[in-house]
Amino acid sequence: MKTLGKKIRLLRHQKGWSQEEVAKRLDISIPAFSKIETGITDINLSRLEQISALFEMSVVQLLTYNEVEEDQKIASELESVNRKLMDRETEVIDLQKKVIELFEELRHKKVTA
Image (cartoon, rainbow, N blue to C red; front, side, top):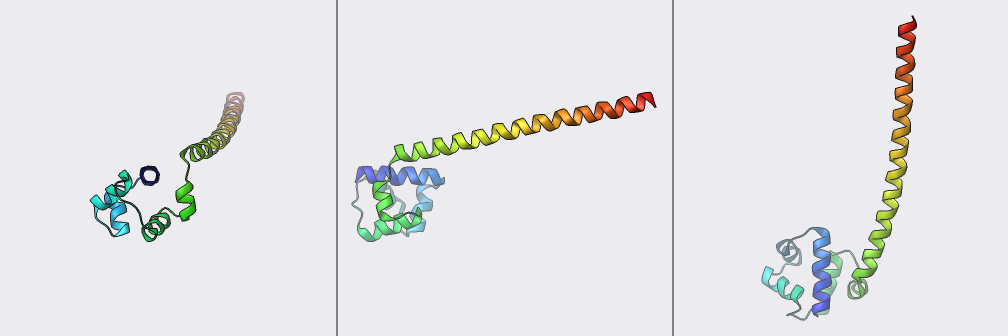
């Protein structure tokens, strides 16, 4: 149960929720939820279903949730976002160059006029 509790705590942290928030959503006391996270209390099937629904996953997903796999997924997504960001930065730099060229062209035309 300690492993499951750690998974639940990790999911809670990923959502940015406090123990109090999750306890309210589950309609249990904060100490009762704390005992779930620490593995002190066994979780019955109905509570497991309630927790998995709260985190928008199936019971099987909750039980088999693997932090390493999640980290790899996040790293892959982060890499993709970084590539897109670099592409956008290149586009911005190109646009800035064009703006400068146009400004210089306008300034040159005013000077010669």
